[in-house]
Image 1 (tube, rainbow, N blue to C red):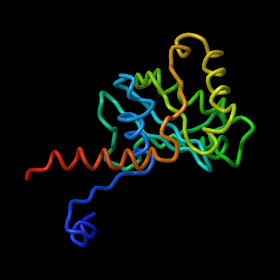
Image 2: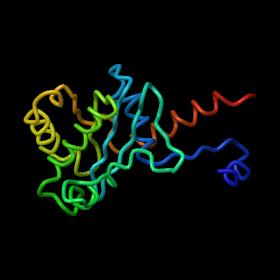
Image 3: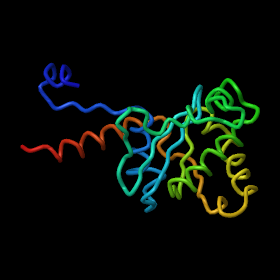
Image 4: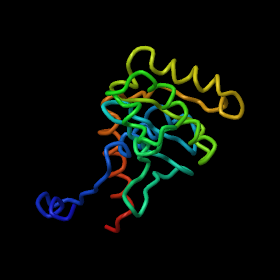
Length: 170
């Protein structure tokens, strides 16, 4: 970050790609519907995500923000091993359960699904069907298609940098 700021003579900011996509969807895409607790889940080769809690992008001291791919699936393997692009058989059901866990543990009320696999035909419907089958209280979770597609990270990074710059003294 520092070297980039020096080389370009402008402030630079660093943000994880899934966090950037989450912020982009929250500010300008599927999350702008007014939910203060929002999650973006990218399902592609692996699984990643970003969280907005109480209208703020969630970050942690240890650098693992919303690493849904590292959460454990029922077989004690990381979710991205059993539900990422390399393991299609149960992916939608496992991602639905991970989203349902965000609903009950963090109060996430809306989850946007993106990524190459997540945006493929029929994937979102399978996630939504699993959520509905889980019944109460999980069926109140709103699971939607990410609206910004491949541009979510770019839009989010620009919005994040703009917000960070606004916080800096002139």
